[in-house]
Length: 295
Image 1 (tube, rainbow, N blue to C red):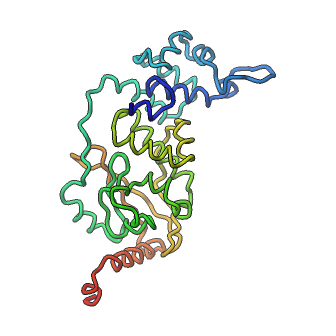
Image 2 (cartoon, rainbow, N blue to C red):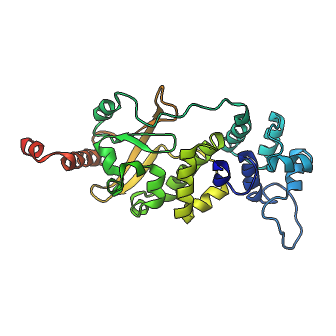
Image 3 (cartoon, helix red, strand yellow):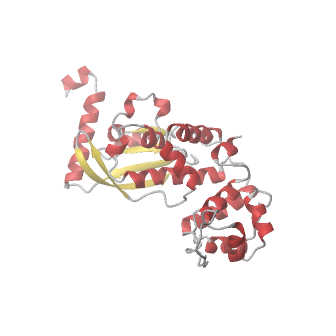
């Protein structure tokens, strides 16, 4: 059921990916001459893609419908060339094929590893947070908590980057390159859906976003798979103004799918000064009256 909810129609994630990319590849992009007149099929027809990839129409149709799930590496490469897939999409296509032979993964830890709070505290004034594989915010220092204005009004179980980006009214104003941020969120969830199509937590998040965000629903059906995002991010914060931050992300050992994400700026720059101010403002908001008096 979860796999069916995350895609359109019957079949497998492999079939859905191929169908989405086929319908988004024009004959001109594929080097096919078409005569004048209206084409009923958007993008490439099945027989056109099959011919470009050097496979039979019947074989390709079975791939797209989920009747065939073990194409050879040569066929995968041929399909990637015919569809003009980028490196990330090509790798994703291999992942979709290889998933059927992988053992079921253990459920990912949904709490941050021991010692995380101490580590995050030592990273101040740089905002830092720990994200789950579905972008749930598992932990964060004071600066990170204030980087997403308004999220503190949501209950803790709803603190999720993709949910904030697509559903919180402040997100459009916070992220300067909003289109890049949304594309990165969808790409990360799409990649995860390729290897964990039946994960209940992923299915629930995707269903919520598809129902409540037409923008997400449209992007999800286009099945874009691309690098997750730039190594810098510009935000327009209502309290400290516009700042451009470098982003570093690293995986946690022993916590599958979890990432430590750090935002930083060069000391002495206006962006670094803004981070110090944001950290101090955030600390004052969470301090008790007695702590403020001692300070």
